[in-house]
Image 1 (tube, rainbow, N blue to C red):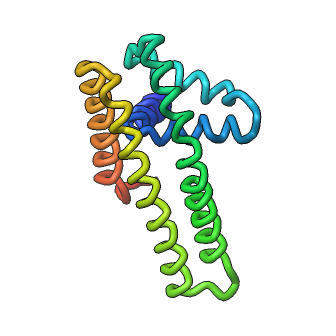
Image 2: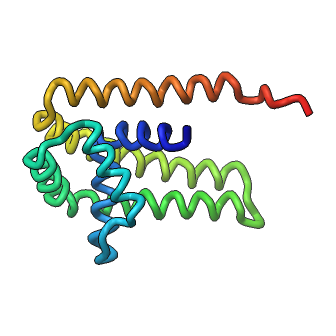
Image 3: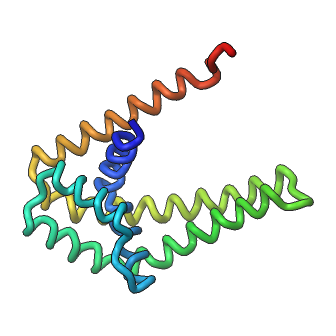
Length: 159
């Protein structure tokens, strides 16, 4: 079940271009190839979408071209999230400081979402109608899973 959730989550991220862009940027930044598990997951996703070698190449080119735009946005999001965690765990933590830190995360997420929209607009035309449909189905599956999980939240087991 965990593998299905992960695969569906990754598929949703692919649509926006964020996941692969993030992983590609991280791998290039560190100078290493993607971790074996990450590489395996991305390969499975590409296979599930039945991406051709040409599509893979085009998508990779787009993501490499967006690297300079993504790097500061990803860095800002990471820094904002790190600062939010610090604000939550600070000895003098209070609602105001946590809300302020959370607002910075939201701003960084919004900026990143706009960039993901732009990347998605470049990637979508490369995909076939069938591939776009598969992505929509995977996203719907993730949404359905989360909805069911939320519905079960708090039900717990009798012990």
